Image 1 (cartoon, rainbow, N blue to C red):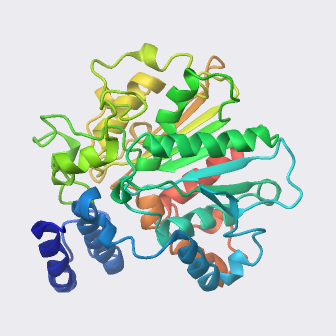
Image 2 (cartoon, one colour; image 1 turned 90 degrees about the vertical axis):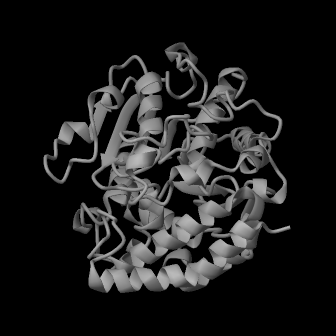
Image 3 (cartoon, helix red, strand yellow; image 1 turned 45 degrees about the horizontal axis):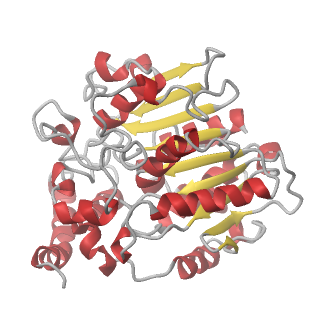
Length: 409
């Protein structure tokens, strides 16, 4: 039975969207530092995403009305200029995954990206996410693009009655199938809940080392604490300070039934379930961890300055990747005093994986995939556009990820 709260949220959505339009043309917007006075569509999308996340795992089935298979058909039709040149776009690799592109002459050493989509483990992949991934692919250097394949894991959702570890088991099944097929160069790219899944999978592989680990890891706004700290909703904490800016707030996580639907009988403190929830943090948990400990591997993390999950992400980066931002930098002031080395960190010591962490000025949760997707239409309209032609601010995340992949794959 649908909760009354969810019914009210959905009934109020048209009203809230109308108010966003009024506020945009009168006072500039709804308090977003990134989009107020600049991008009405982004503010409308932000309002929709906030509502969707507040529904939680119990009632979000109301929004999952289009199958992934049908969604891919929509993308294929709307973006025919892109998908027509993508071999096997929308075709299945196994029962749990779809190709965005499989190179017809793929070799064992050629890179394959497994995309793990975000959505709180209760929302299926959205068109915006697919469009952004395709935009990244289009911007890859031609020599990299010609050998790169992309596979999306269509994992089962908690909103359909599939709690953890279902998603981890599906990822392992697809990953090991690729390895058995001879592929040796797999990069995992995950946003939000997909970022959680990618980190948890490294811990799984740490204790099941009979499988070749991923070569690289890309995380966009990874959701590393499925339940926030008790003091997270207090001034000075990112969940509190970013509540006017971000799609995620403390209220997103206040439903115990929602958390139970996601984790089932699994312990919250497990590194495979909620990598940032184990207390106290122990750097040894991440030592000798596949991919992270490989000197030939690379790790990329993108987080927003105005993102509610910023503290959790940078705390994990501090202990797992030795990134100093969490304890040294107070964010929220880039508009007054932008310090580049507070927003960009790179490390390559030859002893472990190279690390690249970016804090997007005024960026919000998963803005790269949900708010930069219109780049694909721009690329289709003007096929001569290159990465150098793309605006550094408007498409901050896509540019950073594409540059990383060009340097890594």
